[in-house]
Length: 474
Image (cartoon, rainbow, N blue to C red; front, side, top):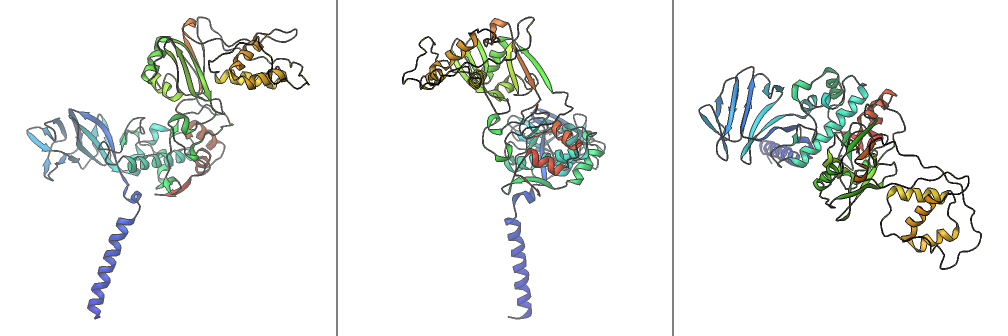
């Protein structure tokens, strides 16, 4: 082969290798730009800039516009601006930052068709996007390590959304709490910019994949398992205990709802039990966070996730799922703590095959999580003898009866255990007492601040809230 032919062959080989490397690189390499929905499905959109706007329509034709342009829907795939009709999608650019709704944005704008309306997108580099996010999610006055942790999980969250949502709905992310709060240049701050630069390109991965990194304001003392909130099983999103204090203003909260309000929330969550008679915590996790509720009404009994109820009632009303429910009549007091009972002498004899307890009523009503804990506590205190324990084992329907009888029994020198009172309309209201704010999954922002204040760096903070993940480049 001649040197000339060898040279051509070598160039073709290198070109082919280059092309193959482009197609074989992971998708994340190309996921550096994000599109954020600023205005969804509207009939009119107004944008502006300090300098003239340039619009490029769907056919590639450029149009010079003034410093302000108002676009109106015109048909299924076009808009009217002034006396011109432009084919969608329309890209907008300017020598100065673009503005919408009195906020300035980096990058470009893009108008796309959305049903019978138009949607305005902000298309920009991922790192620039983060500059408009962090100040809306955390206080720039916090420790830099806490801000770095937030920068990494916000970047990871956005990148995962890009890879999952690209091509769905016309944009990658919204600009509200349903994605991440984003306010463009209006939200930029030197301290959060520093955190973004210090962690540039860093994301969390698990098993080589981009991790799911939800976060919330304050856990109330322990984060939630993702399975109890949204379902699924992610090993790095199990609940973790925060055995330290925070400065969160959301440490505790209360909410009072009428029976009508609770019924409306239940219906919104897909649960209709008729006229509500009782609402109680059915199951809790190991940290005491309510995972399921039971609603009892004139049309029967249903269970639902506490997270579903919270979202239906309003996430600013029921601020977390770490709550208890009590009657809230006029002049109601905090729940009375359970007093320990003196142990009853145990029987040393082997119980008969068919134990007694004929005076104990049976109940087919499921026991609540609180009642189960009470029964466990009483058993550990030695309140039940061996015969009674065997009777409960062989006749589970009697367990509630034994609990009620034990709570009603008055013995000399033993404090009386108050019987659990039903929580329902008879008391006038439902009183929710809780801790924390947010869904509880992943990083607690006030918890991250507390750890950073104790000297933890951002890597250690991320390992605490997302155990098993690895900090890697995109």
